[in-house]
Image 1 (cartoon, rainbow, N blue to C red):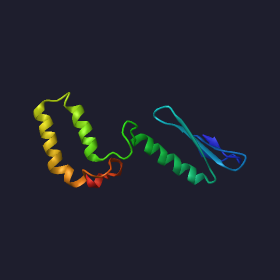
Image 2 (image 1 turned 180 degrees about the vertical axis):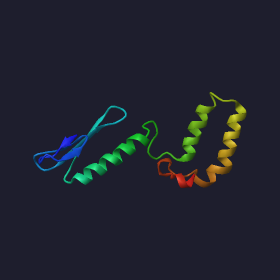
Image 3 (image 1 turned 45 degrees about the horizontal axis):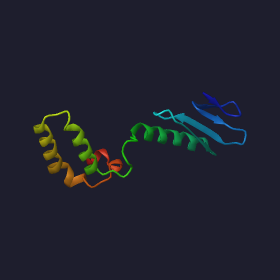
Image 4 (image 1 turned 120 degrees about the vertical axis):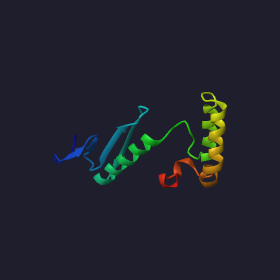
Length: 116
């Protein structure tokens, strides 16, 4: 647990510097260390929550602006190697009938669970 200048507990990974800024650091799932300075403790905690969520749910293999249709094409090309042709046909038909008209043109990172 980090402690502030006055001895107050701040939380794991948070430190209070002598210039009255709060420093927060964490390690991503790929081993990169990220650090940022904040004037307020609440901003520091919020940044941590947001960046950890983004780190957990992001995938570096896909571009930021990938659409659902582009992702499906990539995914089905991978599936063709492991499943039977009839399964690929069924997946493609279900996608074209149910998913493509509704969310096919949307950006993958902006899809909400309610839309599914």
